[in-house]
Image 1 (cartoon, rainbow, N blue to C red):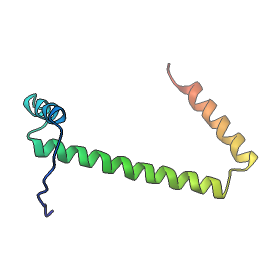
Image 2: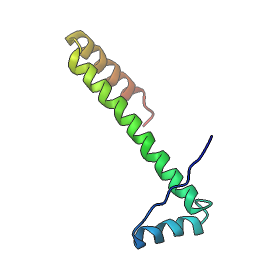
Image 3: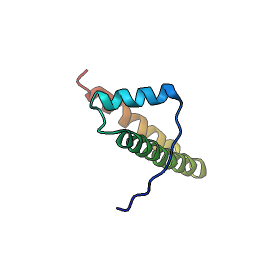
Amino acid sequence: MATEQIAVRLPEELLEELDALVASGIYESRAAAVRAGVEAITALERRQQTDRAIVAGYRRTPPTSAEHDAAMVSLRDAIAEEPW
């Protein structure tokens, strides 16, 4: 995968936290930590887009009463089967 270098300005406090993560060995370098952060926020945004699409679908075609009742029964059964 091709990469491109970018410049990022960070407040001192955030940079100190970033350096602490690197110093503790959590990340290999500042670049690795920043890359992990960008990957995390892009993954979060993809999940949120999926969530919004699901909600929009249910708003366009709401579940019927029978589907709602079946979902509630399934939910109760799943909870009852939990070992806690």
